[in-house]
Length: 338
Image 1: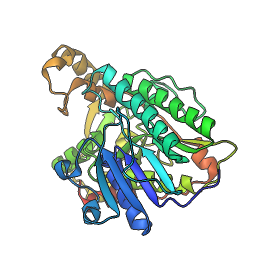
Image 2: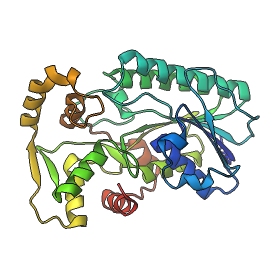
Image 3: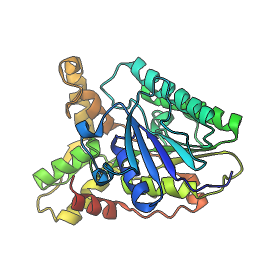
């Protein structure tokens, strides 16, 4: 299927970190486009990000209260250039019961595909996750077999199959992006915490030994989404790519780049992984007494000890023009505020 000009974007999970940034990029780049944000969270309550508020009083941006676990309907008939973007997910780990990941991520995929059927929409973009690869010792890419281990990864992989079934059944255009750790203004996750701690201490933080931590800057992810839409489908009706940086990022790369940008005078704080693992084992019995929102929750810290060496063979084969190396990404992020 040849790409079409999308003049109406329906973003499910649209008031989240990626959704608000995507909405802003669409509205700023395509002056004839409109965006609808479908989400259970009202942006007026959780706060606007990425400069999106300037569009909130125009007819180009609207918010629709929506729970993707339930039947979805559009407020108006979609145009021929409509695109549905499925960003909706239960994803935070820890923080949810196992069944919650399946309930939201699978029902959301089913309902969004059902909406595409009922409205005749012919294009869906789905953000999956590198969690579908599970735990692995070696580098993996799009041709590696998914082996999800967590409820989040398992539910995301099942949601991929639901979208693929839709594309095969309808001939619709489907792009599946498996992002690594997405970082940038307003992200508020592990990379934000690492950068904030380093800036507060005026000191880089290293893991010893270093380990791969595949990630992507939010601006690179948005550029990738728009770029994929301009490609004719390459031999099938599904584009599936890993949304990660051009070169595999390692945990200590963030500290090294911050050291250069901020000119830290103090030597890096080096944290031995084996001591961290030992501390996590000791703290494990106490995790039920620690808030799942705490940055020192054992399950959250345990992620630091798990490498995720993910690369994208397909993006390089297809000639994607990477534009945001880590030094440029962190400089841009710092200039916009953590």
